[in-house]
Amino acid sequence: MYLYEAAALGAATLWAMTGLIAASPAQHLGAIAFSCVRMVVVTMMLCAWVFVTTGWGSVGDGHLIPLALSGFIGIFMGDTALFLTMNRLGPRRTAMLFSLNAPMSVILGWLILNEKLEGLQILGIVLTFLGVLLAIRFGKRKSQLHKWENIRGPLWIGVAYGLIAALSQSIGSLIARPVMETGVDPVAASSIRVGIAAAGLLLLMQLPFSWAKPAGKLTLPIFSMVALSGFLAMGLGMTLILFALSGGEVGIVATLSATTPAIMLPMMWWRTKEVPAVGAWAGAALVIGGSALLFAS
Image 1 (tube, rainbow, N blue to C red):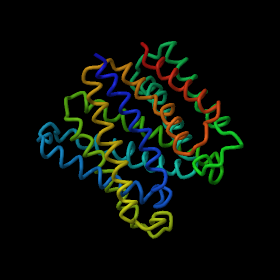
Image 2 (image 1 turned 180 degrees about the vertical axis):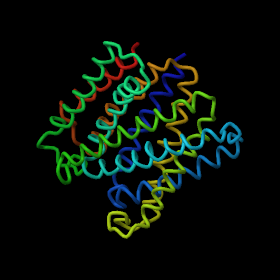
Image 3 (image 1 turned 30 degrees about the vertical axis):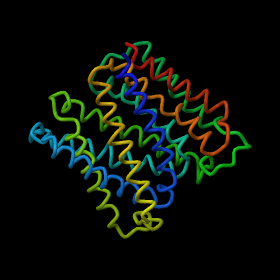
């Protein structure tokens, strides 16, 4: 009876899991190298699936440029900034900051597409931003010593990366939306977007700068973790969301898929053996409540 809702929660759970799985390899390889390996692996997975299902026929010539631009901004810029955030702020704060892509999408839709902004949506935007601020400012107790709760470098730089990641995701989705409304196969569209991101990252790694080079060696265990995170997040996770949207109400699906920051907290509790601070729980609750209001109308 609640199959589509369960799929949306399953996607949120997978995204929470991949945040924890990706933390160590992203720190080991560096954000650029980690994102590059992940995108190459996911591109191969998606292209193999589209080849088997013959989904390429749904993609027309007029779709290529907007999908490529969407992939460059939403995935190349967005995912790179996301893992730069994770390496500085850890998975919990990164998940909270990335959740801002929902209110950013609503605001951009209002500014660019002239979509109507309801009173409940304005309240949802305010609550979501407050939840993120609360979780970042009061989300850690002094007794928490795990490395995932450490802040590396100035806090404002990590927050800036997180905001860039969320905004890039929102813009990328906004660009792709008109294309997806024409009936393009979602997996085929994703393969183009991810492929553009992979190509961009491969080119970026050729630059003669230390930040563009791997910080550590790509061992088999590290590669396995990178591939697993890509498969769970962009393979299974996105498939579950597409399935949920195929039969569930958009508002409910969007709200349930926004529960990732809250689902991550008990996982971090289990993984780090440290109870998350009250501020972290309260911030996650505000984000979920704000997301629910965003899609209530």
